[in-house]
Length: 468
Image 1 (cartoon, one colour):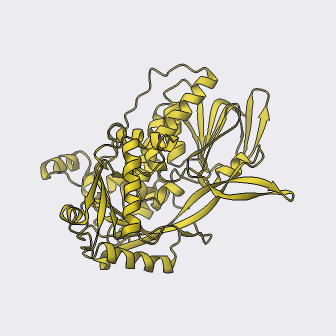
Image 2: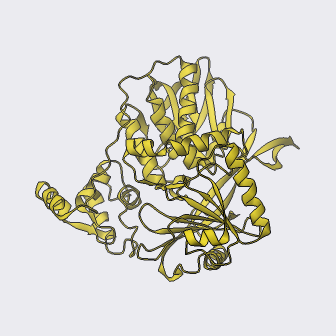
Image 3: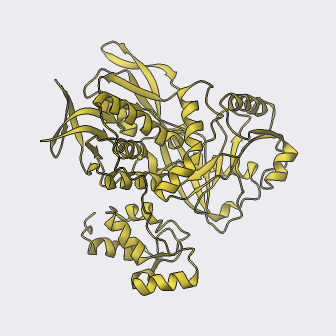
């Protein structure tokens, strides 16, 4: 049995950011992830938006973290060498109900001190973004809204945490948690781990992890959403577009991503039990709404569709020998602290990506105070990204190929990804083709891996991962 100071349960972006922040302190930490790799759950299916902060009630923890997190994103992504773009956003209204929503969000944003917010007329909005349908009546402009690749950010934080001394247990399932006199015993299917503190970042399973030791207080109820990805050759908007529909909850989101594709997302739908499967009816509604809001976007350029699942926290109450929802969804972040040294992030939904680093900092400070930990003066916040040949000029590319010929062997022509990049992704932790995709983007292009999948499979097998 191992003994550490803190166990982080869950290797999504929240767990990875928390683990990285814990390394700023002299806190012996293990991150446990049930799957074979990092960021395989909710983090892998995400709208990729870094929100400005006008959606959240003034004075709330969520509002403060969103504005602060947004402002710090440039430095965070520079440290971790992850691409980040401040596209700016336009929330578009097409009628009186939506215009009132925009007015309220503008007022919230002013109170939350969101920089640069402007209410625009429909004419002004169309001048800024010609892709918008001409019947737009108003728009809320937020210049600080950005976009980032969520799984690349989570993986980068994970690599930096490991670089600074965090231990990792992948393919490890938590079976139980016991309270001990001076901390907790985490029972897994591989070994027992004694620790003084626990950080529960288990995403859609966070309520179940907490209930291994404590009575239910908050439970997660899931809903779904669907996304379409357009080819990079498509003519796409310059700005991130949020559609505030006249029918509540029927809007879309359009995100020109850091890779250059357009990501179209629907409003929430009922969860059908399949975490990442699309719902045909929802996809058709998404296509119809997108055509109405962005009529110049060619929806024949869609190269991929995927579904996502989102956790919604509800307070629960005891009833007839069990626990049931009280029927009121919790709008704020839920950070449970049911016992000393035990913290649970339950139901961290939008804007969880924007606030992931802020949540990690907050929890690291809480645990550092609880453990009376000293700062880690040796902490290095910088992580080196995998070197990419795409975008290099000819001379730089030729020089790199001369050093390592594998950089001259382009395995994924759609995304211009070399054998050397794929091998580096495998050596950094990718054990499946999906893991390679999340690290370097191989298979995300127009052909959706039909040309590169066999070579990637062969490289995985050569590196000892052929059975996965």
